[in-house]
Image (cartoon, rainbow, N blue to C red; front, top):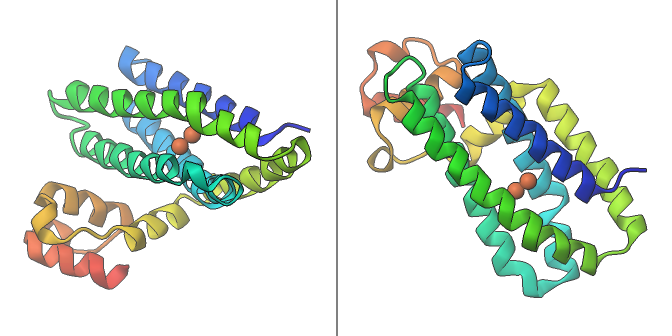
Length: 196
Ligand SMILES: [Fe+2]
Ligand SMILES: [Fe+2]
């Protein structure tokens, strides 16, 4: 049976492979970005639901580290939305590189601090059970990207002051809000809030 740490690390390597393909121009950029978005979000949500809370309960001393990891998920997802909004822009590479750097930083911390702390805090049987739970949530979300988008929209519908119109438009596009092209920033924010 594969334990949760191995599954998480395997998932990190697969995501990195997709990043390399985007950077090398190997394949359709939009299709690769869609795959990255669905895998990254499913991975992050599965960690937040099935891994981080177990670590915090088993070792409350890791609470701050886990909160920091949560923040880094949101930061990475924000940078990915920025890159997605620039998919046909000459600034895409810059935006995508910033996203990759943020993920790389998070993955390094996760693999050098969070996951070793988890291995110390729970036994092998628990790690295997967590692997099953992690894979279940992750698999369901990858198979159903709209469930992830809904979760994200509900979790962090930004206030108009915090987001640009482009970002709001991108979120509106992701959740399929009709008439979005003609909407002002405020109208987009309202429509997204209603959806959440
Ligand atoms: Fe991870
Ligand atoms: Fe993570």
